[in-house]
Each structure stands twice: as C-alpha cells, then as structure tokens.
Figure (cartoon, rainbow, N blue to C red):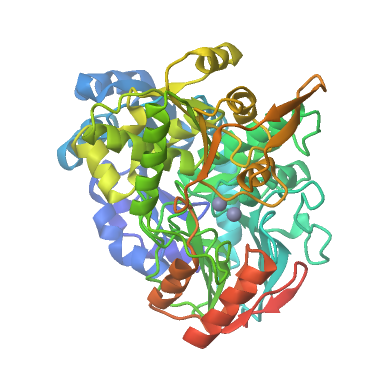
Length: 628
Ligand SMILES: [Zn+2]
Ligand SMILES: [Zn+2]
C-alpha cells in the first residue's frame, strides 16, 4: 500500500497532518490538537488493516517551547515519582521523562501524562530510571538521544524501503542458510532469504579460538545486501560479532528488545576489555558497538513489525535470560511461517516465565538442543535450590567461604533471587554475598526492566516493594583491594564471580587463594564446556597450574570441597524441549535442530520425529535448507 493510499484512510479531523513511516511504525504528525489528544482510538480499524503500530504525535509547529514544557512537567508530577531528568527530542515531537517511579509519573489511568500532553502539546514518554544505577543503561540512552537527528533520517529511510516496495511481488521461495551453531554450540548465525529479502538471525562469537566467527565466507552472505539483523538475546554466542558487521559497512537496522540492547552493549564492551587484558586483540572496537546501538530498533514481545517488504517479525518470550526472545517470521501473506527459538527455557524459574508456545501458525522451526540428548534430564528447580542452600549452609557452619563461578547475565541473577528469598524466610541467614565481574552491572539492567521478569517477581517488586536484587546482602566488588579484603577476612561469605567456566575473569583470583583450604567450597551451577578449567576441576583433578598476568605459573593444590548443583540451567532439558514441542498450538512440519553437540542434536531430532511425526534435520554449517 502506498503512502497516498494510507493518507486517504486517515480520519479527516486529523488535518492538517504529515504522514511518516519511521522504521516499522507509522506516525501521524498532526497540527490538530484535538486529534493529537483524542485521535488514537479512531485509528483502530486502520491499525487492524495495516497491522502496524500507529502513533499520533503533534506537529512540531504546535509544541510549547521546551523550557516552558519542562516547568509544567515538574509542577504537575509529584515529587515521589522522583523525576531525574527531562529530555526533548523535537525531531520526534517527544518529551522524555526519566523517573524512578514511572507509575507515579504516569498517574492513575494515565491521567498525569494526559494532562501533561494537554498543557504542553508534547508527546510524552516516561522511562524508568533503574533502582541500581547503571553506567551502561545511561550511556546507551545518552547515545540514542544524541543521535536522534541521524536516527530520524535512518528510520524514515528504513520505513520507506519496507513500505514502498510492499505488495505485488511474490515471495518466490524461502531459504535458510546455516552460518554457525549447527552441530556445535557457539557463533549462532542464520541467513534467511526470499526472492526479495535477506535477513540475518543472530551473529555470535564462537567459544573456541578456532571457530570464533560465523561463516562469512558463505557465498550467499553479502553485507551490502543485508536488509536487517534480528537478535534473539544478549549472550555473546548470539550477539558477539554484530559490531563487526557495522565496522565492515553494514548500515541497516538491528531488531531486538530493550533489555537485550543494554545487556548486549555491556557484554560487548566487556569482551573488548577482557581481550585487551589477556593480550589478544579484539576483532572490533567500541565504534562498532556504538554503530550497532545507533541502528537498533527495539520491540516488545507480541508486537508485529514489518521488517522487509515480505517479512513480518514478532518477538515472543523465550524464558532464557532477561529480554530473550524467540523469533516468529510471517513471510508473504500467509506464504510461510518460521519460528527460530533461540535459546529457550520451557520450565519455571524464579526470574522468568516459561517460553511462549501459542503461535497461531508455524510451518518450520529451528530449535536449540543444548540439553537435547537422551541423558540430559535435569532435576526440578525446587530440588536444585534446596541442594544449593544445603551446600552453602554446610560450608558456613564450617566457617568457610563459598565460591560460585557464573556468567554475568542469567544464572547470577537467578541465584541472587534464590538467596534473597531464602533470607526473607530465614532472617538468621545473614551473610554477605559478593558480586564480582560484570554481575553488578547486569543486575542493574535487570532493575531497569521489571516488566520483563516473571509475574511473581514483578508482584514482589512492584506491589510489595521488595526488590531482591537490591537487598543489602549483595555487595559489589569494584577493585583488586575490595577483592583482597574479601579473601583475607575470616568470616564466611558467598562469592559470585565471572567467568562461568573459569576460563578467565576474577573467579580465578578467588580460586587461587581459597583452593587450598578444605573449609571452603566451590559450587558449579552452570554448563562446563569440554576443555575449560571449570570442566577439569569438576571432573576431579587435584592440582592445577595457573599463569598470572606477568607470565608466572602458580601450582595450586585443590583441597577445597568441589560440588555441582544441577537444575539451574537457563536452557530446557530434554523433557522440557519435548514438552515445548508438544505444547505448540501449531505444529511445524519441518524441524531443524541447532545449538547442540552433534549427538544431542540427533537424539532430539529422532525423538521429535517419533513423537510428533515432524520431518527433522540436523544440517552442517554452510548447508542451506529450502523451507518453501
Ligand atoms: Zn543464551
Ligand atoms: Zn546460546
């Protein structure tokens, strides 16, 4: 449908107005104040027909000067909302209010923001300031704000490209190429093509030094031809190499959820930092990260967006980490529907709801298989939590310290919620929990987006006013002196430190000093990949040698207790993967398996084939599969 056709369908009272496509959104900039204030409900029919988000915003010519608008805002919004900053983006006719309590700033049934719109003529957006301050969230928001003029142009260009070519053309065919994470875990990357579109799904870093990059040498992979990148979640094996694409000249959009955007920036910056510390060179610089941020377009779960002339994208909750999404792509008008699960957890956790399964139509699906093998049955969460608390309590009774290696995003926060809740029920359990690595920053991002957490946790935070992440039992370790104090102090404590597989990071510092004392305990709660130090210790070696930054080697006798508590995984185990498939309302005919060791992928494939009669395949990297 052309812009002219759409114009015809807009109610007359909106006149005079300007119609603009901003990325996947349609925006009506109206000079009619009444329509700006009351017009949105009249667009329901148009929203249904176009299947687009439609915003009504004031034309810049009717906006009150920012200084006056700011004054009115500060008078109107009560102090308890704790407004921290008010920014103006005239490019989008938008006033952005940053508040610690956005609910208070919006007012009951939105009455305050409505009054503010009426008095100032600005489109009002109210944004949450995290409970725990986060430098990364601030920086990401700052860049998006600073780059508003560029973003306005960029969004209009994208919008035009998606819209003007729309309709008429047939999809022709649908084809998927495996660029990484097939018959392996790491460097997730898939290329989805039709006759008119080329979309990249994830672009991650490999775990080993040999296969660090997805297959950019595949003949169909051309950076200049890419229409969009879609990112499922912020783990490095999915987002790690995205900045590289921007450094090589990609200028298109990156679709992701808001928490994924902030977590992605955090982990990529850390990746550069860690690379430098270990003397390796990082494949990209912070410039690439900034470029990715400039081109990011965020969407919430369940929102439907045109991302190319023949592809419509919807994100749904994947239950894996904060902001993680499965990708639903509706191709053509009912021509084909693909779901790429990304990493999924189809089971209860403290932090997130289980993965979404209610897709109305799915013909083919790409599913992960990290724990898809026959023997991959994990104990229930309740049991895992009890085991963890038991080992911790035994160590504390012995006056020892507990060291838990974790990834900064995901399991760290899950364990924090478990510990904080246990303390709520057992006030005697009053022992410090030190957080080292990027855990603190990642946790701050969790306090920025409570609406992405499980309903139970949201209730606890928003209604009962208790935020487990902000419990005073958690203490940030900021520098080597802090770290040394924690090691030297005699009292029992719990230490959560990165990296999760002990292949680097502050966890090694603690391990070096705590390993020789049998009072202490090392607890593994996450997957330990073959060949990592974590995996070796887990298997029972008694002596390791570690090389420090100066190149000196230290032999370490492991006398501390070493324990593994299973059941905390952010991935579905085999039963959950099969239950996920069983729960799908619309069963895919084609099931493509990725993100797993070959044996596990094949074992999942054969079970899915037997139970659900799905046509399954486990492609190699570089293979292409025709979906239709
Ligand atoms: Zn993941
Ligand atoms: Zn993954």
